[in-house]
Amino acid sequence: MLGIAWVVICISIYRHRFFERLSLLPRVVLHAAIDLIVGASLVTIWWLLTPVTPPPQPAFILRHKGAVLFSDFPQPLLYEYGDNSLAPIGYALNIEVVNNRSTKTKVIEYYADVQTAEDRWHRVLSLPMSPAHTIYFLNQRRMEFGMRCNFEPAVFDDIADNRTLDPGQPLQGWMFFEWPQALRGVTVSAKKVRITVKNAQGESTDSILDENRTPEAGASLLDNGGVFCSGLPGEKIDLSGRNIRPLRD
Image 1 (cartoon, rainbow, N blue to C red):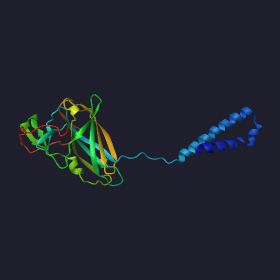
Image 2 (tube, rainbow, N blue to C red):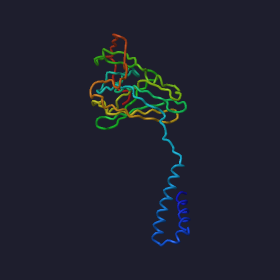
Image 3 (cartoon, rainbow, N blue to C red):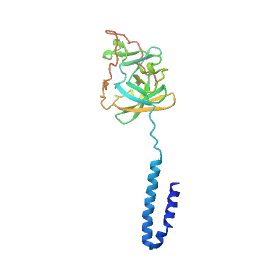
């Protein structure tokens, strides 16, 4: 439509008697200049009248509150499941999820991917905590010095399970992941972590967390993550007879 309007206006101007008094060259030059001015004016008017569609807003706002990464398998943080087996936890993430929609919503799924020093991305496997599972920490990495963990803030799954969020309402808690098979025989150095959260409406939001400060060995508390794991003073639980094996192979 814009092109048709431009052609009609230009032809109407060109047929004006004023151009009949000009020789060919001035007529062509003047007509070209008028065509450009008319075209630019029409484009400007179209641009001003076209409504600007704002970019879609993410369903959630994700805020990284802290993380603990255990580089070497098996890790001293253990997830109890099934027949008293213990799965090593490679990565624990403290995250705040805020409902950014104008209506109520609910978190129904989340997952994470880790980028290693080789720039390869790996899907890390979430360890479900609803219903709750006991998590142990091995002091001095010794099986006979186990301790039941309490977490502050609480476990994310416990808080999010069957919880409907009002607009702007936050959830914050710890998520737990085990390393996939490809990362169990190496010392893991995570450069970046991508967390994805999905809601009941089928919308998903992801955020990339920069973990460049994570050292290659041991465990580190990142970004003022608060109290990670606490237990009863002096508690020692002998876990020597338990099987350490991943939840998923």
